[in-house]
Image 1 (tube, helix red, strand yellow):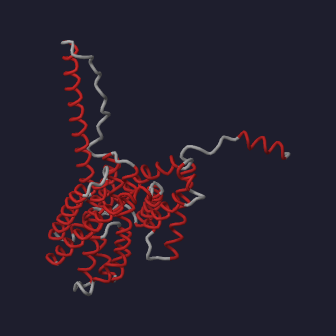
Image 2 (cartoon, rainbow, N blue to C red):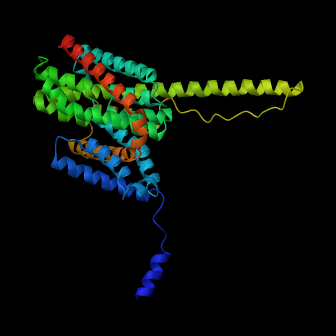
Image 3 (cartoon, helix red, strand yellow):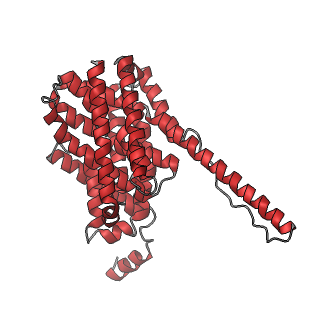
Length: 369
């Protein structure tokens, strides 16, 4: 084939478009996150993925690509791959292991989640943070970091900018916990078991929990993971509750539009003005989104014990890769100039929520152990 023929053939090939460029960039980001974790094991892969996504969005060479041809694929990764990763996250949970901690610990975890969620949501609204940021930050701190933010944002239909800002804040604070909490174990008078439970009840992401608790030894790590997974189990009812709330809002909006239409129609009949057609409010989200149903199904499947250890290991690896790609996509949506405008209030919310979750969980650990 001559050079001219090759050039003509190249010109005839369809350009790489759609989701492909963004997915390829996300895959490269995941590979880079794995390399960072291999070089610095204290940095979890998911944390590295978020930071690398943020960096890609602001590097002069990559910024036009991230905002342009790669944006559809990166947005898709932040949504659909996140859902798949959350489904596989259910395979890390076993009802027998979690309930084996005892009802006192279960009650402690419920109290921590409730106090953190309501306190963060209240403070975020008092600070006047825009959009769904108070809701998403409250979710991330109280349940399981970026994974919970992704799940609730799907049910609430949150803006991508709100999701990205919340993920960035929760990831930053969770990363700081890796360095700060081990320094407090001795001053707070916590043994290895107590320290593990405190980490599991207060640190956001599962990877960050592992990185923090392993400093206390194998016993601390086991307790931390079990308590953390108990918090993860509350993701399903929280998302279902959010879906119910969204459905109610949609119904109320539809009723308000219908009433306005009736009044306009009556006004037209009396010569007061033209009638306006009702506005469509869109379909209501399901009470239990499909990916949450899949998450619950995976918990049941893991509890049965029918899956071999090899299958669970492979599923765990796939789950981490999917979430890393999703978090790279979310990180790439962070716009630092926008965050700077609300950075002070957002940082204050993060600090306040961190104090609440660490304080309530510490008190809970002292009471239950």
